[in-house]
Length: 279
Image 1: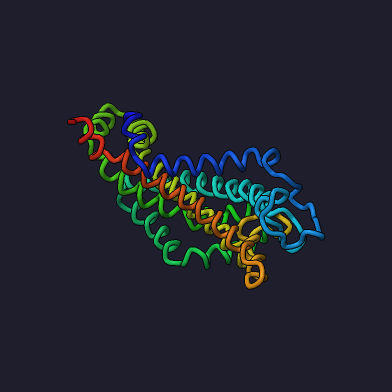
Image 2: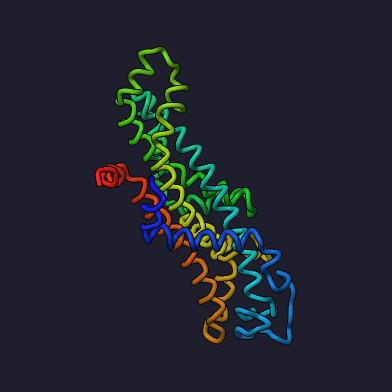
C-alpha cells in the first residue's frame, strides 16, 4: 500500500480526519472541556450556544459541550474494548473452524448460527438486564453480539488461505497447526479484520448509545451520548438543540468510522493493489 494511493482515497482521508479528531477530543477531554461535567448553572438553564457555553446547556445548566466531550471518552472506551475483544474471539473461532474443517467447523459454525439467530439488540438488552449497568457489562454485551461477524469473515478467508502453496509447504515441513494459523494464515487475514473492526467501532457506538437511550446503559450522571440524547427528547419541543446536537455527534462519529472502513477496504483490496502495481 503506497502512501500517495491511500491519500488519494477520499473516504479514507475524510474518515480518518473525523475519527482522529473525535479520539483526540476524548483523550484530552480534561483540557478541552470548558466546564466540569456536573457543574450546574441554574441561572442559564436551556441556554443556547454562546461564548460561555459553546453548545448551550441542559435543564440543569450543565455545559453540553463538556458533557459531549467526556461522553466521547466513555463511548469510545466501551467501543474499543468491545471491538478488540470481539475481533480476538471471532478471529480465533474463524481460524480454527476454517483450518481444521470437519466436525470442528460444524460445531463452531452452528454455535455461531445460534448467536446470529437472536436479534443483536435483544441479546444485548438481556445481558445488560441480567448483569446490570456498567462499562464492563455493557462492553461484554456488545462482545457477545459482535464476535460472530469476525468468525464468519475469518473462516471464509482461512478456507482460501489454507490451500495456498506457502501453507501447504509449511504443513509438509511439519509445522504445528498453531504456527501455521498464527504465522502463515493470520498475517494474511489482517486486511479483512482491520476493515471489519473499523466498521465495528461505529456499530458499537450506535449499540452503546441505543442501550443508554433505552435506560440499559451506564446510569446517570455518567455523560454518555445515548443518555444525553434520551434526556434531550424530554424537552425536544421547546429545546430541540439538546437532542439535535447529541444525535448529530453520534451520526458524525459513526459516519467517520464507516468512511474509514470503506477507505481501508478499497486500499487493502488485493485486486486494487494488483491494478495499482501494474500501472
